[in-house]
Length: 550
Image 1 (tube, rainbow, N blue to C red):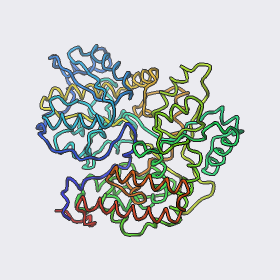
Image 2: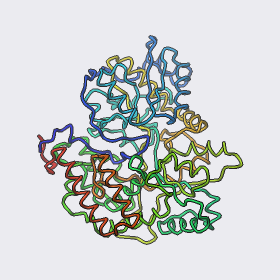
Image 3: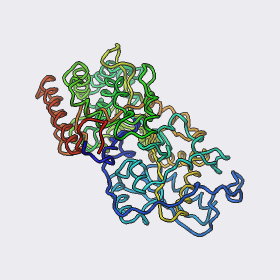
Image 4: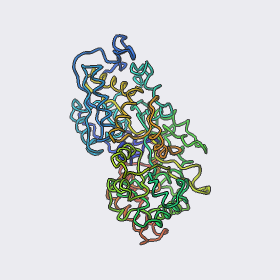
């Protein structure tokens, strides 16, 4: 195998899905550039009792009173007001440290800005970043000297949480998600993010629908009832564009459902060329068992094993599982908004909030915006709720167990390595402040009050959301998080090539609009999948033998 080890480490922690709107991105490999040398951060937060007393008025800090500014970079409307308020309150405790909240317009701007600043030496780069909006994997960023290893830091007493470490202060079910593909602690998980259906209760009631659909058969029947009851109402607002292909989350969930028993076979294994002791130790614990949808949390898959399986023909691209889920999606598309092939997500949100669409497929991050917009609408508003990605009414051996969806760590936060060790310590201290229950609670409340995006339920222990918000978030708590990497076995294009993505969408439309039948669609899709997967293999010089390595 000719592929360099750094490129072959294009692996995935199971919980990461590249299609997430604001908490993820394509796995573009950043260049090495002119990276700063690793800083000696010691043990992280200074445990001097004079500077880390706990919650007694003089909490935290580093003991250094020289004025400094640290920068927390985020995306527009994602916890923006909550973070700004936290920064102000932190400065009151530590006047020597100013925390600047740097707001980027979108994912692409975020990645471009970060890579440019790090390649220029990193002095002007932010100190705290979204892990999955840097253009590279966490382990690769540590190797390049761009991220701080947090192995010891996360176990240190947090003075803002009565000495409870960040490790013990977040939901232990997501500890595995804190590791990089190389086995180092690379990120801190702030919240969960999920996908599901929003619905207008008044429209459901008018159509005679008393319960939210629990099965796909019920969902299709309910959408038909809505269509029959009022021809002016759009039954389902669905983001379909290649640039915002939220329908792709459904395709991913179906493929995960069909192939879940095989996931352990796709993991990096002992003897693989890219295996490390930590990866092997974690992956050995992962065994599929029906009824345990979280079995693969923290597992690291091998892209080469996935591609080997994809090209082997063992998965029937025209078989019963493909026939079933593509027929279902075509049936679902009959209820999409007119012109769905050209409408953007913001337009679809407007359709739903204006009462013109009965159901809206999207992410948990919309909850805050919907709550505020309903308040603004006053008497013109409507009651709404959420429901989950459904099951089938009858068991199907091609889709074992219950369906999963996106239920992943949303806000993944990493600390950027700097030449100035004190700068890193200040960033570490602010992260401890942010991961205390009192502060995290306030960040949530302020964000929701501003109508901005929270990703979903908090992973910081002790944060309590209102019954109203928790009720809305219930619709996103699917049984587990799907493996987004194996989707390419069914849909191809692992390079996320825009031209290929447009081609795939055009093929979908031909099928949805009746220009070709199911058999012809699956035949053409199979050719597309094989061609684009082969391109990925060729581009990365894979020999499909995971045991070899240059």
